[in-house]
Length: 390
Image 1: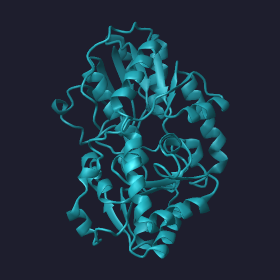
Image 2 (image 1 turned 60 degrees about the vertical axis):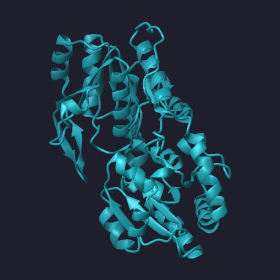
Image 3 (image 1 turned 45 degrees about the vertical axis):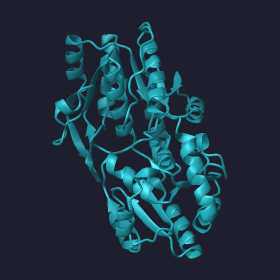
């Protein structure tokens, strides 16, 4: 299959969409497909020789305000039509709903090329966090319009597919998320790193990994942490990531460790060197950080939706709280802070719960769905390739 993937975020950027499509693109290329990535240009695009399983076509873009490491793609319909008229893909997959993605959908439809899309981000839910709630309906109409132009929209969980269907989205399918259980592994725990954090071998370290932005529910996260600290003063809190809130969070919480921005490989060492992961966000479509934390051997607590609903059995592989009960998440954090026996049990069971969620399995299903959407026959069964890695 000749596949064009259009996305406004891709490695070396670090976020859920970039990570997901970096892995998917490499694995589809490894499986013998011709994969071209259309993404906004940036100065640090990797040498093509380091990405042998796909090629990248830089497109016009602008920096996103507040996120200097990310870029927004600009409309490029004429350029895409010219390119695809000369080198026609079997299918175009649009991973983001911005101006570049919409222009790609229109270009593909005009040329009669099958086009699919992915729903990764609850932009309509972000409006309340940025004090623009009146625009929620407008954002939802935009998302629905963009996705309903495509043959199939992929969302990360069955629950989200059902929710989107209820809001008028059509032709939905699941594209789940895998986890690299080699990159995220308890054996990557580092005594040297814990020494840098000035914690003893038995002191509970709570880590948070992600974009420091309003939609991540930091007030609730620190409410949980404050309760954990009162219950067990030995708790230490580490945050890894960047974002517009970082500077203010550092001022408000000088007792916390703000570790900064790390590569996918290095962040695995940070996860494994901690003990507890609290997932307070309520706007995720999946929540890769939760499964990465579980694979790294952390005891986790989060709200009962998205990845937690799929992988966490309350009291067995982690702790979950109803999404409308923030006090229950506080109580779960306190339990983890005070009960080392519970932490040890959940750390082992959490790892076991995600070990079968390989990227190879996830991508094999996505591959079949894309070939179906493109109207292509399935090839004969072949020897399974090496598992994908992030």
